[in-house]
Length: 243
Length: 243
Image (cartoon, rainbow over all chains, first blue to last red; front, side, top):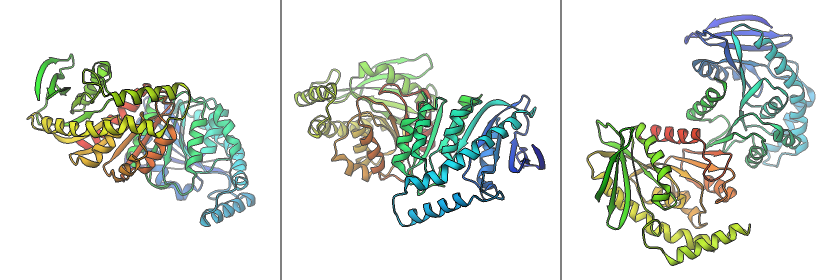
């Protein structure tokens, strides 16, 4: 991991951009940390630059609660090389959504499965790098979408102790079996009128998770309309489980 | 309203039993209140004596947040005269549940509709009495089941500003139209594996509510297994809306 820039935000949070091989990312650490901080991995749909305002807001909130936060660019997003297959799948998905047609499972598989396959080992390599820093300790949480990436990480990465999963993207049906294997505490956010999601599928997915502690917070509104109090509740979930 | 007994609980909360005509009830007020306190009406499935441990816990939590809390016995429960119709409907309901049969709508109608018709004006009369006390101000929230009573109250009683509704009992299908007329902020609690409820019906009901701010908190577990953190979240909802 090579730091490429750093700045102090006005609340004292240290923001450092880095590259991990070819993958760009951002690490935020609290203004003052006496001990190594627990870490929240901030998931997102891809496009660090476009997502920056929302990511930094989540990172500041995490830092205020005593957490470090970190994110990396997704394969095929932002400045990373595009995948022709994924781009075609995205076009097909948007065409189906725009036409008000049901989204074919095969499109979701083409879009999401290769992304999960590529992204999860990258998140794991990034986690190795984060945990090698003296200012980062554990435990580690995963927060956000892409929910399929969160599910796979929760199954294969034992260093992740709890997850806030945002049910705001499509999930391949084959991943329901993986959802049953998840056992860490989960806090699932669902926007009731999310335009990029299938509500019934999100409810079925919540039902499938194998975790003994799982909570669904559904709020009225669209994909980007998560209310402030829902973010606060997610933060309290991490405080309960990671401190 | 005639107070029949009073005691100070160990946290300083003043607990007073009362009767309002033939209806027994309990009022809890915070240890120290400089101004008239906002009020939370504590709904329950009937049987004040049996429900007391859970009611007093909810009242203490409310008092700690600065709220008065009050409840009354339901028609046909506790020491109040039984209704033969309701008793028969309850027998029929339990028989269907025990046999694993779908619960006939007609049974739910027989059980719930007359209860709502009788209980709602009683809650309103009790509210008149509570608000006439100098130590009780407003605003007023309704918390709990019977959810059908909460729905009707939210529609007909303008003094109720926000409600935490516990989706833990059956709702007559005719009440979905009333649910659409609810406009106050709602916080709906659903126990995912509630044995005395229909999950899909609870989700449909959440969808039907007309409120612009509505949140569903679903947690793993049965009817009485609402986790501590879910109670805390409901308390924060009232603090947001009633103070």
